[in-house]
Image (cartoon, rainbow, N blue to C red; front, side):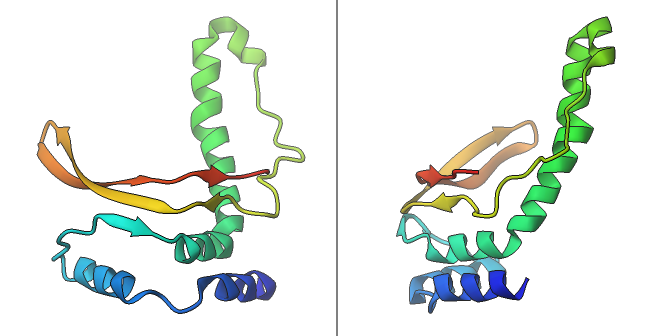
Amino acid sequence: REARLAAAEALLGPPSPRLVETLAAAAREEVGDWSGTYQPEFVNGMLLAVWPQVEGFSKIILKQTIEPAIRKALGTLGDAFSIDMDGYSLGDVPAKFGQMIITPGTQITDDGDLKVMKVRANVEWHG
């Protein structure tokens, strides 16, 4: 755990003033125009710190959501289906985001329109 935290800290470096300003505005629920291009070091550092929890969460999703859905879709053949979790791992090296481009957007829902942000980035992961 300490090694992961130290590695995350090394990746993070000092946060950019714009990032600090954006996070502070979000905390006050006053997020204005956050569109722009961001370097991914902060996100990659956070992902490195929580990667073991991401793996644990992925196991839960596989066993509690995906496996039952596949079993149901297979009908009677699904009775013999199971995902073998022995040796399952996302790997020791977490996924990494490339440069992030953020643009505002709108998501239409039954309860009305939501302001959202679209994040576009390349993701590299070798598992």
